[in-house]
Picture 1 (cartoon, rainbow, N blue to C red):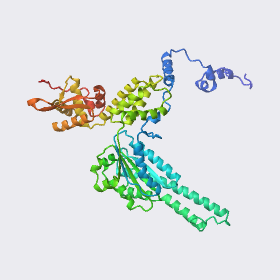
Picture 2 (picture 1 turned 60 degrees about the vertical axis):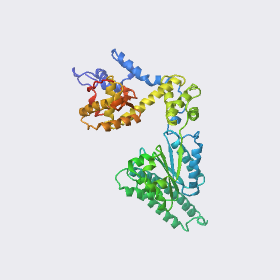
Picture 3 (picture 1 turned 90 degrees about the vertical axis):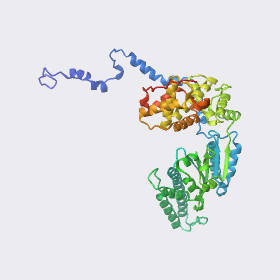
Length: 516
């Protein structure tokens, strides 16, 4: 009998044994036992432990060395320094033109020219930041809007982006104005005996309320422009209304302006340059920045005359100037004594060969520092700079080859196949024979030999191949072609193209040669 006096069923386990059995169940293991007491079966887990140990130490090993960088961001192109060595003259020229904005007048339009890495954008942004800071100091409404036309490269996108920026500014402006009016109304209603409206534009509280209601209605009417879908004239109208909502001077900075003209023509510039004749409250000035000194040759004469009212040319940096720039940035970018004495002169020398490109010099210095950190060395050395030069050059080649048109890729692949088969001093006819075979393999259109010769010349200009015209005496002249880039890496980039990928296992017949 159990505790209740009932006969116990011999087939039914008693409570004590039942509880012990429950403890053996998985659910109770999960919720009722101390996990520290659980002992796993003795199974060989050597591989798992090794993997776990490796994964735990992955970042520990990388973080074990002392960092070389203090602030790496100052070596990036997006950084605008507080001082721009050897650009004082150009900066003063830009400031002299834009200072009229602080007097409420319309500044002349400016075109800034110069090769890549000559400080055009950095200088223009530096002056623009100073302009906006000074305008706040003197309480003159002035704003600068930056557009990168390499990214925003159509009239619709430029106008939509500008419209939305000014719509957002107007909403902020309206919000601040409503807050001021509500503060004024509260002061008037709390002290009705005081003449709080004496120096305002309002005679009664009702007029304040009416103005607040009008502003709220204006704010509700501003509609953001979608990045696609509207007619262009509606986008322009929204931009125009947003700019002209209240009094201010606006400077629109169009970086890589030649890309916009190349993609969309000069309609955008025509509309922007003629806006001031229609605006009532605000004034607009355009600052165009271009790497192409001849892009205005393709503009409508009316646009060209209004856009290029002032022109400023940025010359390339020489090696000494590049050293000054790198010295200035490296003081902030790196920890003390992180660079050996020959690092900055070598970076400057390499970049001076690339048309005085400061951006290239900064990229070299940053990449050399990253390579030194990966090696877990205490400082950046000359060898790191040389490795960085090779890495950047290879990255450039990969990007250029990757973005080539398909026909140019086929021509380049033909040259690679000839070189891999031991053919030297390749001529145009040999390239064309292999090119035709490749086109047949991937079912591509076959261009004429004259057009293929033009494509070879384009590859030569890009620095991918070296094509030299040589005389063959009474047999005429021909181009002798050789690769200027690493063959294996270039071939890998070409084969990553979906159309050329099928060629990988095909070895077209290389024409037998008989050198004279």
